[in-house]
Length: 103
Image (cartoon, rainbow, N blue to C red; front, side, top):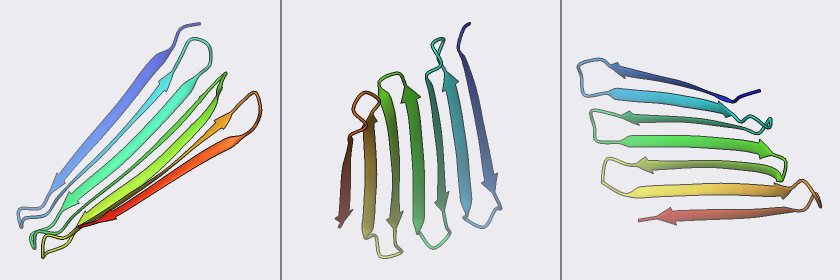
């Protein structure tokens, strides 16, 4: 059989300087491989903002999972981080990488 794609997105504002966006997508390949992604972002009237996202994928070679987030405070400082894990379907071995940054 064939594959397919499904996407969604919503935007919310309330007129006081706050807004948010949420989005997601799912993909299925013809061989049964699949991937799912979701994310959300928000901005507040005081200048703070945040974003987070996640991805998961699976296929005949293994799996991949990744999550991350970033925030900006009212003084403009930013922190961000992401963790990603890949696992081989053949060996079962996993590799994980994480990053964090503040500025």
